[in-house]
Image (cartoon, rainbow, N blue to C red):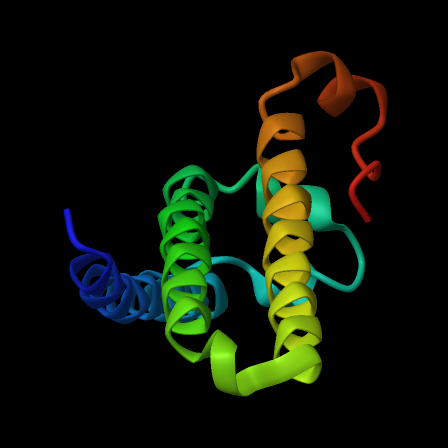
Length: 122
């Protein structure tokens, strides 16, 4: 496969990742009890919609990371050191947000934690 073909797929990945993350943000704010977020995050995690809403973010993050890598591969000769630093910061933010979301997703299925401390997440 040619390098330019991978870069084109990267553009498609950014578009699809944006769609997934937009759907996640809309569902997060409309279907989950957002008024409970400040007091007790465990009520949001125990909501029946939580699993599929949290599952929307995972492919979005992965696709966005692939897409930004493809964009940077196209611009790296002109971007210089500041472009590389921006690329590293951008991907580290995506990795850390995915790690946090995945941690909450895994903890929401741990029955011992839910019964031990219902306010663990808040």
